Picture 1 (cartoon, rainbow over the protein chains, first blue to last red):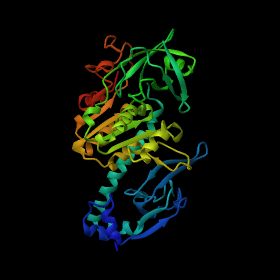
Picture 2 (cartoon, rainbow over the protein chains, first blue to last red):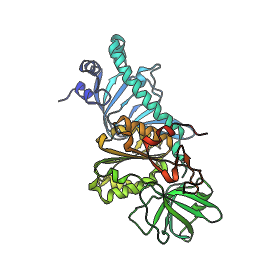
Picture 3 (cartoon, one colour):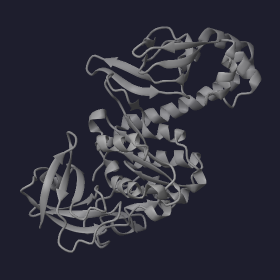
Picture 4 (cartoon, each protein chain N blue to C red):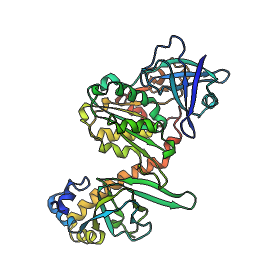
Length: 154
Length: 265
C-alpha cells in the first residue's frame, strides 16, 4: 500500500523533489476525502493547510454583491490548492468547494512552515516550486482580466 | 446573390448563417473564408465554419461587430446575401495526417477550426491523438457544445472546454485555455498544432506548446485582420511583409511570431 511520501512523489507538483525532501513534507500530511459541494476552505478564514489534489475537481469561488458567487478557477488532479499558508496574513482569498468527490493529501501549513524555517534547503526548494506555480497563475489571471473572448472581431 | 437557407442563434451575440453556395462554387478547405456582401452596406470576410464535404451549404458563424455583420444578423431564411470566395491559405490538414493534432480555440476562434474537426472525423484513423482545447468567456458563450461533447464521448476527439468564469452550478473547467496544454498527451516531435483566437491568447498558447516541445514550424495560427478586397491589392490587411487575405489567414507561427509581439500603431 502506498504511503503519503509515495503519493507525493507521484504528484506533478512534487515529482521533481528528492526523496528526502518528500519524506520531510509527507510528515505533515494526511489523506482526506471531500464529498461534492463540501467546502475545503472559506474565504477570509485562516489558511492553515495545503491541499494536494490526487483525484476529483475543486472550484475556487469569489463572492460579490453585484454579481453573486462566481467560479474563477477549477483545480484537478495534479494541482495544489492553498499557497496562502506561506504568505502572511495566512488567510484564504477565495472559497474552495468540491465539485466532485475529491481525494487530497492535506498538509498542515504550520508544520510545513516550521520545517521550512528549520531547514533552509527545504524552504528554498518549496519556495522555488511555489514561485513557479504563482507566476503561471498570475499569467493566467492577467489573460482572464483582458476578457478577450468578448472582443475578437470577425 | 445566394439564398440564406437558415439562420441559427448560437449564443446571445453569435449566430450562424446557412447559405446556399453560388453556382460554380469550387468548395473550400478548412480555414478559408468567404466575403459576404450586403447591398448598400458592404462586404465582410467571414470564416467558413461548416463541413467541407457538404456541397449543399456554406455555414458562417458570425458575431455582429461592424456594419456588415450587424446587417447579416437581421437576415433570415427568406433573405439573400452576396458570396465571393473561398479565399486564403487553409490549415495544413495534409501535414497533420499520421501525426498527433492539438487544436486550441478561443471564443469565436472555434468557428474556423470546426471544418478541421469535420475533416479529421471523416478519416479519423489517419490521425494520431487529437486534442481540442476550447476556451470561452462563460458557459453561455460556448459554441457547438453538443456536437463537441458528442465527439468527445464517442472517443474521437479528446475535448476540454473551459470558461473564464461561471456560476457555481457549472461543473466543467474554469480557467484560461493555456493552462490545459500541459495535460495534453502527444508525441511533441510528431505533433501539429492549430490555434485560433485573440492574438495574445495565441501567443501564450504557442508559448505553452513550445514548452511542451512541439517545434515552432509545426504550430499554426489563424490571424484576424480587416480584409477588404481579399485580393492583396488594397493593403487593409497588411501584416508585416504579408497580406492576411492572400498569405494567410493561416500562418506558420515561426513566420509570424516576431510580428505578433509588435504593438501596432
